[in-house]
Each structure stands twice: as C-alpha cells, then as structure tokens.
Amino acid sequence: MKAAIAVLLALCAAATTGLVPIKRQGETEAPKVILDNDWGPTDFILVLMALASPYQILGLTSNTANSWALQCSLHALRSLQLGGLENCIPVHKGTDYPLLNTADLQQSWEYIHGALPWSGAFAPMNMTAEAAGSDPTDGNPNRIVPSAFVDGKAPDLNQLNGTMAAAFMVDMVREYPGEVSIYAAGSFTNIALAIRLDPTFAQNAKELVFMGGYIDTNLLMVTGSANEADINSDINIKIDPEAAKIVLTADWQNITLVGNAANSVFLNQTDLEEIYNVNNSFSQAMMQYFQAYFPLWDATALAVMLEPETVVTNSTDFFVDVDVAWYSPYYGNVRASQQMYAPKGQTLRSVRYPFAVDVERVKELVRDAVMQPGSCEDN
Image (cartoon, rainbow, N blue to C red; front, side, top):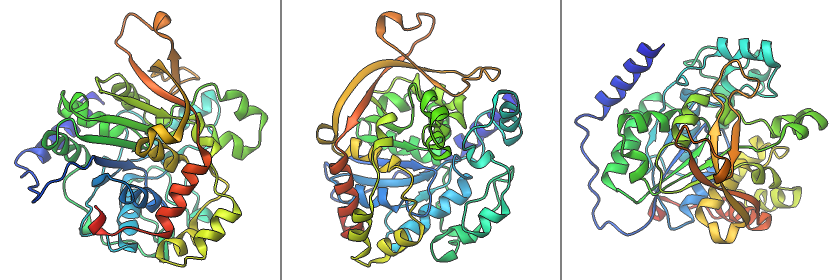
C-alpha cells in the first residue's frame, strides 16, 4: 500500500514538472480561491457565490467523497457549461482513491462497527437509484452515470484540464504565495497530496476553509430520523481519515472548520419559489435536481469564507485531531481539545469553529447568486 501511495505521489510530481505558470495581464489584488469539492448537479451554487464576491476563482478541483472524482469532475464541468463559464474556469480531476481507504475496507469496517448512514462512493451499487439520477457508487471509479447530470448529458472528458488537482493546487500557491484560499468540501485527498508534493504548500496558502468536522453529533444520529442520522454523519472526513489527519495537522496560516453550524441552513419553499421564478438555466437545474431536505452544507462553508465577519455569529478556537485507527469505532472522527489538554506528543493545529451562522444572510447569498448569475467578466 505504501508503494502504491509513493507511485501516486511520483505521478503527481511528474505532472507538476514543466508546467508553465499562467501569465495574467493587468493582475488585480482580488483574493483568490480554489474550490475543491465532490461536485454534484446543483453545486454550481458555489461557483456563482464566488463569482458574486470579490474573489477570483483560479479553478475547480474534484475529489472522491459522495461519488467518484471522475463523475464529480464532470458535474463541475456541466455546472460551468450552464452559464458559459467553461472557457474561463478550468476543471481539474482529483485522484480516484483515498490514501488508504477502499470500498472493500470501508464495507469491512462497517460490518465490524456498524453501517454509516451514507458511505458515499463506497456504498454498494444501487442501479435503481442510478436509473433515477443518482451518482455511481461501488468499487469502480471510472463508471459514469449520464442520468445524474443536468439534462442527462455527460460532458466530454476531453474538456477537463489535464493537470491533476493536487499539482494544480501546488502550482497556484507557488504562483500566488499568501493569496490563495483553499475551499474544501468533500474528502481531503487532493490537499493531502499537495502537502506531500510541496512541504511549503500549506504555509504559503492564505487559509483553509473546510465543510465538515462535526463535534458530538452521535446523540442526534441515534435519536432522530434516518435523514437526521445522515445529516450528522461526517462522510467528508470518514472517507479518507488519513488525508484529513495530514491536512489538519499541516502548518496553515488559518484553518476554519464549518461543521455543526452548516446543518442549520435550509432553503424553504418560499426561497425556492423566488429562485424558480427567475427561470434561468441555473434555476431550472435547481428545480429539477435540488434536494431541499438536505442543509446548505457547502454553501454555508463558502459563505463563512466570503463574509466571515457577517456570516459567523458565534465561534470558538480549539485544537483538532483525527482518529486514524481503523479498528476504532471512531475511525474518521474529529477530536477537539482545548490547549491545556491537547496531546503533547504530536503537533496539532488550532482551528476556528463557528457555532452559529446568520442563516438569513447565507440564504440571501445563495438566492442572489443563482438569480443573478455572474459571467466570465466577473472572474
């Protein structure tokens, strides 16, 4: 297994070698962001929110979490195509597999410790769900399900950028040291590889903002509905705990984890009708694919990054660790410590952890972004 990881890192390093830095005319002082996500059919919301902000989107990268990185890459590309953005924002596919975890290992762990409400890409194949438009699951990272895409059409693979996600991240942070925010929603695999490719990557990025890192949600998982259990399950970390350990102990300037607070933000029927009434390509896609019974997880985390002083209404700081013992029932769970009780035998990092957010402001950012979508000129 270690040999396989070494080969993967070598391939990423080779992809980085010889890349020509992007030269931009009239560079502004706009803050910059890379959006790393397990993209789905309505995650264009994130792109539109960033376009409506002062941030410049350097690129979209995909990871394996809810589905496989390839399917998620094509979702990202399709999202851009809905607004004619595919020629100004590149999409970089991430690595297919977590650092160590596999579908077989995940299912073995669940056999011993109990099933997760949602296992993401590692869930058993469900052809009935796929026929209805769900993304592919099981052990095959190369399987594409066209019915899951907006309009049932999978974009052309050749339109993806050839540089792997981790290599792209390293290149951008080298080109813009201290300027690039890394937004992460999905697994940490690409970011962990970037850290291993370039030991200065984390410290030279501006910040890391991550959707995930739930604290003390077990009681909610066992006393509520199946959907409540799903909402409070931390698949973004659990699918690649080893990558999470690498990333959350790296020497970032700032780390923000948006966990429990993201579960408080939902679009209600009034919000959705306001969006649908605009009747543009994005609102039409939301009408067909948006799952209103899930919180606005990813959008809430991005709102925290875009407007931290406005959106975050209550927060604290503490040190975090990730359980990477496969035999543990808490494998992939985050453990929080105040400074005096933090482990002394390893270097942990302090993170900012919002307890509460301005729900109405997050929803306003989402509504405005979809109802008045930006263009390439806004990036």
